[in-house]
Every structure is written in C-alpha cells, then in structure tokens.
Length: 85
Image (cartoon, rainbow, N blue to C red):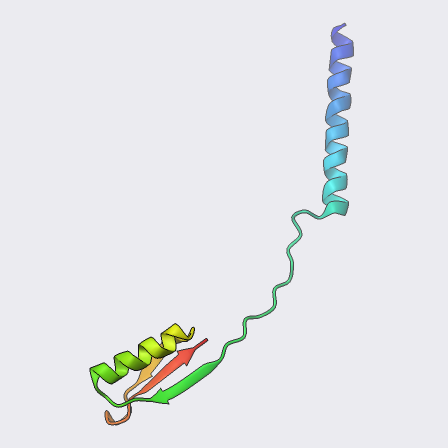
C-alpha cells in the first residue's frame, strides 16, 4: 500500500513538472517585451529676470506637461529656462 502511494506521488510530481515545463516553453509567461525608447521634446525660453514673471512661466509650462530640466543665466539679463516633455 505504501508503494502505491509513493508511486502515485511521483507520478503527480512528474506530471506537474512536465506541465510547468510546457508552460514555460510554449506559454512564455515571463518573456520580456521590447519597449520603445522614450522620445522627448525640449523647449528653451528666455524670461524676464524677476520672480513673478519666472514663476508665471514655470506654472504655465508645468500645467501643460513640461518639466524644468535646466536653467542658464548667461549674462544675467536674459535667463533661459529649458523644459522637457
């Protein structure tokens, strides 16, 4: 009786491993899918160097999905904001 239980357990184990092997081989549930590279747009704007104007521009571009990624002061009279989307 014990021999029958052991052989039934081995049979079930072999069937489960075989099913798992077939699933991995043909089902490819863990296959990585290629992703398209992200594409970005950039925009550079010159702003008047005062806090209120700069904050207005930041809020305007931010509400349209642009992210500030750089700031160039140049000669201090024409600062530039660099946005990415």
